[in-house]
Length: 417
Image (tube, rainbow, N blue to C red; front, side):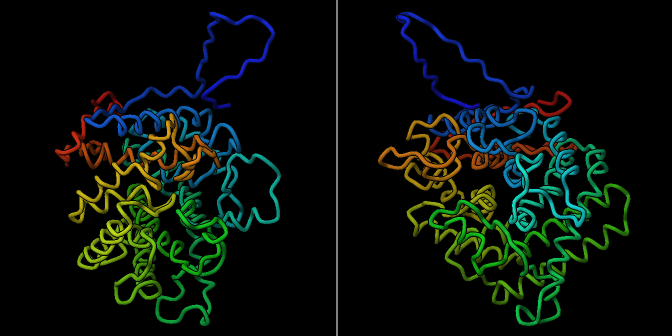
C-alpha cells in the first residue's frame, strides 16, 4: 500500500508519540540526481523517483493504492526515464518474463501481467491495443540500448515476433471500404486500442472509439523499425530485412491514410508529436509539423493536451526542431494541464491525470502513477544532454539560462558515472 499520511485511532494519549514509516520496494539504488534553479522542477524529479519507488515492488505497477496492476503501457512510456532514475533493470527483466508467460497464443499481449483477476468479456479485445502491446518490443529494446546486453533481446525475441505479427495481422484485415491503395494492408484500422489515454478533454471511451485510428499504424512502423534493428543485433539478417520492409510500407500507409501528402490536420498535439518522434514524415514535413505543434502549444497558453503515449516525446520534439523556448515554458507551466500544477498542489508523487486534485481540492483517479514522470527523461537527456547507447556516452547540454536548468548526475551500469 502506498500512502502519504497514516491515520491512528486510539484512546491512548499519543502526546509526544513518534511513528516511523518504512518504504518497501524492490532493491533499486537511485542512479539519477537532478538539481536546478527552480525548486518546483526539482520537486517534480523527486516526485517521479517516489512514484517509481512506490510502484516498483516485484513488478512495475500502475499505482500502489487502487489497482496495483502491472500495465504494459505504463512501463512502455516510462522505461527510458526509469532506467535513468533508478537501477531497475532486474525488476523490468523479471516483468518481461511475466509478459512472455501471459502472452496470448495469437500474439496479443496481456495488458496486465501477471493478471490481477479473471479476464472479462472485453479483456481479450483490449489486449490488442497498440502502444500497450508494443511494450513487448520497446521495453527490451530500451534495456539493450542502455546496457548493450543482447541476452535481453534473445530472451524476448519470440514474444516480440508474435506481437508484431499480430499487429500486422490487424492491418491485413483492412477492407476496401476502410482504405484503398497500394499500402492499405499496412494500415491498422480494425480492432480496439486504448489510444492516447488520459488526454485532457478526452474521455477514456472517446480515446478508444475516436475515429482517428492512427495509433496502430504509427506503432506498426515504429516498432517494426526497432524490431529490424533487434533482429540485426541477433544476427538474423533475413528477419531484419523483412521487418524493415514492413516498417517502410507502414510509413507509406500512415502517410496515405492520416496525412495530406505529409501534412497533418488535427486539433490534438499528440498527432504531431507521434508522427515526428516516430519518423513518419520527411525532414521538411517534420519541421512543418513541429511549426504547427509549436503554434498549437502557444495558442493553448503554453499548455499541453497530450496523453500517455506522446507526452514523453513532447518537449524533446519541440526542442529538436527549434522550439526549446516553448519546451521550457511547457515544463515550467504551473496551471493545469501541466507537470508543475500538481507540484503547486502539494503533490509528493506523480498523478495519473493532469488534474488529480482540482482547483477546489477534490481528488480523482490515482495520485501515485509514474507514467507522466517520463518528462524527467528529457531533463537528463535533453536539458543536461546525457545519453548512453551501449558503450557510447555523449554529453550535449541544452540549458535555458533564465531558469537555471540544470545540474544532473547519472550512474550507469558498470560503474560509469
